[in-house]
Length: 443
Image 1: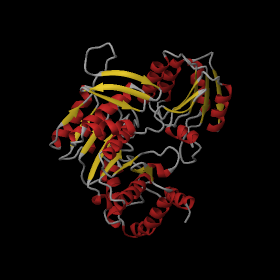
Image 2: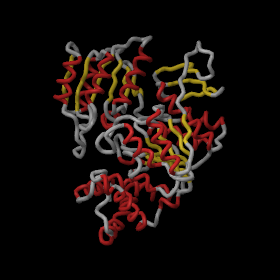
Image 3: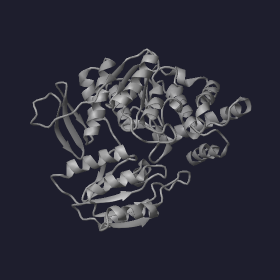
């Protein structure tokens, strides 16, 4: 079996009838039960992993997972982590140490689970597993075989009934923050979304959040009380160099942030106040696990954050970003404005969105960058994903920016090539709106 054969087999299972995630709010436990049934057939690899950190939230999940992975690795732990969705190739969903799963390992895992899926189909009282449930099962087998000490898991959607919540225990549950994303799937408002995300809290685990909204915090605290655990809240305001407080941001540039927190100086290889807040959350989590201070510093400095305001070339400066909801786009825009305040580089955008997003809010934020040009494209060429209509995006943009030149391209590569050709060396090209768009262009 080749890698493409293995990948096509996994994709082909999507044509099997099944209950789709959160389609019936009264039978949500079904999704976890059918995955657990399959894991039992596989010999319960999820029970062979000693330690788990489980991360959910509207924004910052991937960055938090990357920071924690790097800190644990710096402390000489054999650590694995999961990421969802994958930006360009499916093997980017699973990482151990510095390496993602190889194509050969992926093929071997598909060959292993293929007959097990036949057994599942013959014996299960449930329907076929979803694509994400299958990727979770693949991950558990992979990490169990590799005998990782710690597994840092990113929730895909929600938390309470997300496939990742099948894990039997966890040391730490993290809720980065709560915003409006996946509206109508996991909730109609922030309180309902918070309830679903708080579902990752289990008895005996430590709980951390960077959320600051009092109403949202009450939802999370209620779940903590129910599970007999305590919530630790970390959401600090940082000052500039001239402030006398102990929390300071010393430097921010396109590829680095230096800040002071609790009398210690830290360096992270990404810009943005939101990333510093993610790092502080991870510092506190690491401290609660007894991680030495020097290992925390080393881990944060070593952490790689792909497609999080990632600079891939200069002259012109090209930034690939994965922001795909209003909160994330606002953080991206705020960071670009901050970093561009001294250089005043003309901004050119390459944008594409998934069909189910709050595109109007994201466009409103992006237009405040006063872009010189905007190339509009599909956020992915993947036939299984629904994309936002570029023509509708262009119509909305013309209402917001009547004088800015907008151009539609069906192929993301064409949109990028056009933008780069028309840009001068001093321009800044920002690719954003979807992790898939930036992932395809990076590939």
